[in-house]
Image (cartoon, rainbow, N blue to C red; front, side):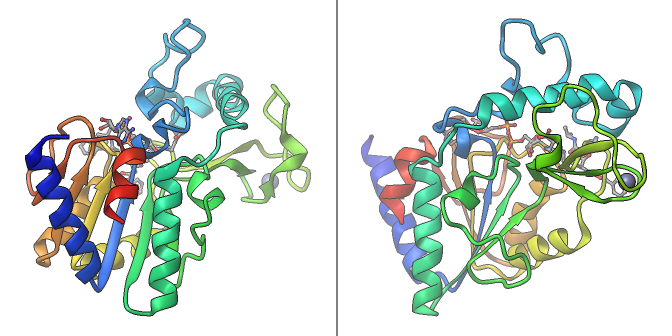
Length: 258
Ligand code: BV8
Ligand code: ZN
């Protein structure tokens, strides 16, 4: 790592120590070192799904047009990801949250765009309504399902099926409990995320291309309130308000800065 990056890491370490309220936003890049391909590569490259645009598959009209195809895409993603484990990035974040909560000196809210559940597996607290030490799964969770028509939750009764399961109580179609493109985010979760970004004095954007809204707008919201902005990503992104840029993989960088 070059001298300049070492200096940035030292400065970020200091910021993290002094911060009172922290908002962390993670994206698919945080799960990359667990072997989960980032959202845009969520195809197998061998053509099984690569001829489809993920944004078409991850959408309500995609599901309504061809429920079987969308359901099978999610079953395939669950199958290829079921043995994936949290990596040092997930663990570093969850340990920091625990220390912050124990010390009572910092509030660290984790907002994730990821649906893989690895932050929760690493010990981040899924409690949405308590600001300190919480985890907000903005785009839902791929391991959960609910009925499109009546909202009834369905989980283990639908694993493994390739046909779109029918909801027992109402006969409706069961769908994965993720937020599709064109769908609104859960009100309470979005509020928790906005509050965390609005009130924080330090905002860390980790492993996200900052292209998907409204999540990508949280950084601007934090900046507009005077927060310091840190971005951790091996690639440059289109974010224009970053104060500290660490070009590196989350699994390597996070254990250094926390
Ligand atoms: C909504 C669940 C309104 C599903 C997902 C035009 C302009 C602005 C916005 C829009 C627009 N047209 C449409 C919109 C809105 C749309 C949107 O933002 N589209 C984008 C494409 C422009 N947004 C929506 O539709 C949202 N809803 O707006 O609703 C509304 C309001 C009221 C009533 C009705 C409607 C819903 C968005 C949620 C979509 N669902 N996921 C599923 O997963 O199947 S989003 C999905 O894509 C992921 O969850 C993730 O959030 C996103 C991908 O983003 P990233 O996480 O950033 O991943 P990406 O692959 O892009 O980048 C990975 C990064 O990691 C890279 O930068 C890479 O360099 C880095 N990296 C790689 N390795 C590492 C690493 N970093 C660190 N360490 C490493 N080792
Ligand atoms: Zn139902």
